[in-house]
Amino acid sequence: MPTLDSAPGGGDSCPIFAKEGRRAVVLCDGPPPPERLLEYWLTGADLFVCTDAAGHPYDQLPCLPDVVIGDFDSLTGRLLSGRDGPRFLLVDDQHTTDSEKALLYIIEDGVTEAILLGATGWRLDHTLFNCFLMERYADRLRICVSGYQCDTVRVDATRTVSWKLEVGTGFSLLPLGVGATGVTTDGAQYPLLNADISPGGPAYVSNRILESPLLISLKAGSLLVTVDRGGWPRYEVGEA
Figure 1 (cartoon, rainbow, N blue to C red):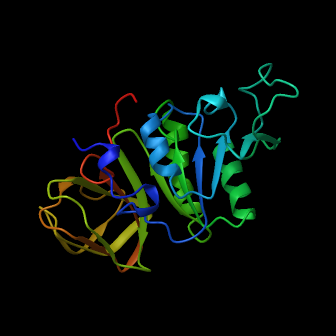
Figure 2 (tube, rainbow, N blue to C red; figure 1 turned 90 degrees about the vertical axis):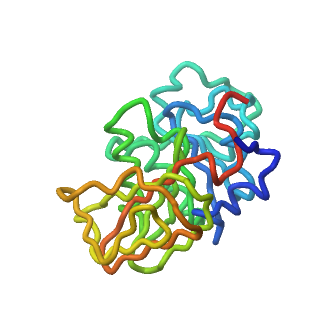
Figure 3 (cartoon, one colour; figure 1 turned 30 degrees about the vertical axis):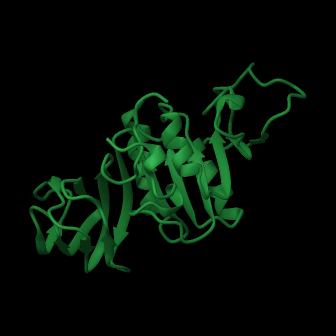
């Protein structure tokens, strides 16, 4: 598998989530990502935010976060007074998760796109909620949820995506909300033409790219598009 050293660029030039505006990397308090993956997304980022205990101790991260935000229930008794490090921002709101608190903070800071790492894995409820944040904040933020084996973005009817990905790369289409209508894909092993994708409909998972670029368009609604890692961001996901 190609390595990080052979990458033409970092996360700011990612083929499915190239940087278009002010960008934040948000490290959530789930399973920590491999160091190389975090370094990849930090390339070109304008802001680095951790939620609660994510990444603690912070001096072992590739760089110190600009802000650590949350209700700090996971960090009770572990904050050191006077220690050099990131800025801690307490938001005592039990109606939002720490991930959502981070998104609200970066929106206020003028960020228009975010990478969520450590947002999947430990708990299914938190994983699903973090994925739903892509729909909830779609009018204010472009969001990519980056996991261990794949990365997920939201696609809607406002644009046709064209991604230059290696032939054989796996991808899946998953409905958000009420789903999507008029879905067309070109370049896939199993292409679609004006199809409808709904929560109760047939599965569109584990497809593969037959010809690059992969084109995806839809007439209404929204989708989560999950792309397997290995063929595109050129890094390994094993231990650094």
